Length: 418
Image (tube, rainbow, N blue to C red; front, side, top):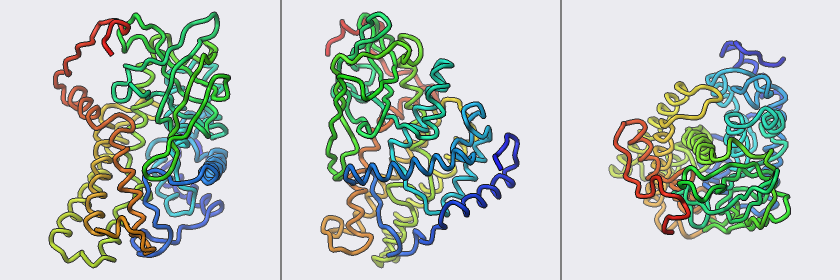
């Protein structure tokens, strides 16, 4: 039976639990049980292209199964294939799903369903929403972000990839970098400079780019943690129809900020089984190493547990203040900062516990695996807006502090020194 708007949390949870029992296997391992199950605590996947594609295919198949049963887009409006329910219903399903063996997450999957689809809902025309939202939520096709460039990272508004109007099309030339999952994606959300005579934030526009277009070249970037999920994308006079423009001409900065806000909301959310390791796995390591009696280690574990609990409580507060379908507000920056703080704190404590076992693979379960966490965690201080950007957002939009001075305000982009 499909879920209907207005269903009580208890009824929904009971239905979800019953459906999960019919369609997935119960999770048998316990994060706190040392040596049981996978010891993967990586932040970024270290997989071959074939392994990564297999993971995505399994994720997409699971999402389609959930979507068709009414559990794949719980808070989305019914007209887009959603259940029209609340964030409390969604959390109830996630709590139940955590008890079952389901495919682990992947950033490209998250970008498609949690970033690009909601952005199209916020800015897309009726035709674009009808064409893209349901297939993206159902993961019939995948998406990536085409935002950052070699010379425009945290200062995203300084990008130089250009889109020049040519009748009903735009001709796009430039380069994007750090585009997670581009090699597996069908579409990219692209931010370009369409008016170099306008101030840098005002001269941008957004597009939905088919990645099989002539002139698009995608190259993997090998990360220090081993994987190659990041890509650089070269755009050589790529022709994009104006019908694929997302938002008005000049609205690119607004579109990009909305997508990045959705990204902060996603990355800041605490989950019981999340990539990068859990509190239970850190505690299990400390018990295995026999250091829980060390007063310094106990103090650091207590601080980490406090951060773990605060993250969860703050996530509940942010979720309670969020409206389904609405762009996340600046409070999501606090959750994102807490997450990067959590990742750094985990790296510090496991490095101290393991010592040389962190860098020497002895084959012991749950030891050398933490190398993938330590190497990957710094990346999330940049992803979705650097920590410095998040602090600016909190200072200016939450605390009401004066904005930082900008020497480029009101100056045409083509007159700025670069």
